[in-house]
Length: 360
Ligand code: NCD
Image 1 (cartoon, helix red, strand yellow):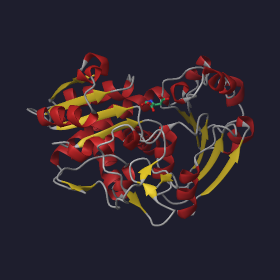
Image 2 (tube, protein in one colour):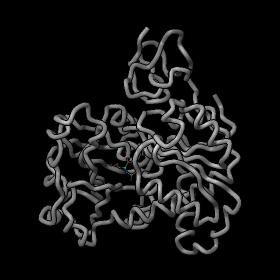
Image 3 (tube, helix red, strand yellow):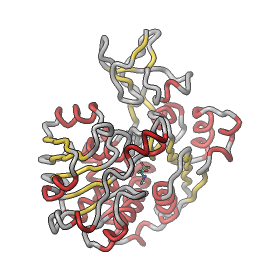
Image 4 (cartoon, helix red, strand yellow):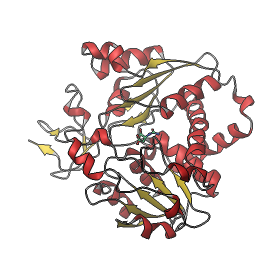
């Protein structure tokens, strides 16, 4: 299924040269923001946030306002017709008809792709459940480019909830496209990186290691990416309680790190970084959030200028076969056409990227 609009569902749907262009444009905006103050005059951005957000939502809104455009949207679906039972298709169809670009965050995996299928303007994925978060990755890439001066040959530590954290999934996929990057995954066994992400790293010939000790990893890293334990994605409070506070970055642990290592975090922070670490010049997370605004300005401009079409579903339907991933949007919005790539029993759902989750 090919859409008439450019959409950003997964960064890896675009070539690396496209990402690099966005980053270069973001750096131009940082240098001379006044030049862009009227670039989106007369354009309107809709934001549909079905999940809580501070940075992503406000940086998108600020980005559009700083480009001279305007905004509409909700940050609490319970104050919209969603509370009356309206499905995702109808809400996005209507709001995309009012807007020039639509930004959507949803708790269900694959929701942004599902919305894009029938939207009447470009759709940007601002986070779909524990799956992907491409605009956080653009933020992270811009931070690395500006603060480390390169996107290749980096040793990257990722720590915390690697199973449910969409930011680390998107970032791994992106960094695997640049040469010589190496990953150290620091987590408990229960919250390890999903195997589909590790398969992508293997396919790109990226080295990775999985370890449980933050102290052991710290001296090796160019960048440490800390993440929050994603409480809202756990089946029970007890399972969350068993995981929280396993990894806390302290000023004492920072002594083990190299003087040029930077600490990044998509935020919000809960307890995983001690407040005193904020005063360490290597703590980059507040600056990182500001880079997020500039890269979103660059993205909005690009999406509004692009005439590209996007291939949303490239695979095929198999009669009677639905994805069995309980977190996949196709199990909740039943009108959606199931679509899989691959053959036989190794089908991959095109909404959630899970494999072998079939029922006949
Ligand atoms: C992240 C998210 O929503 O995935 N936050 C963000 O967008 N900056 C990380 C998180 O919630 O832990």
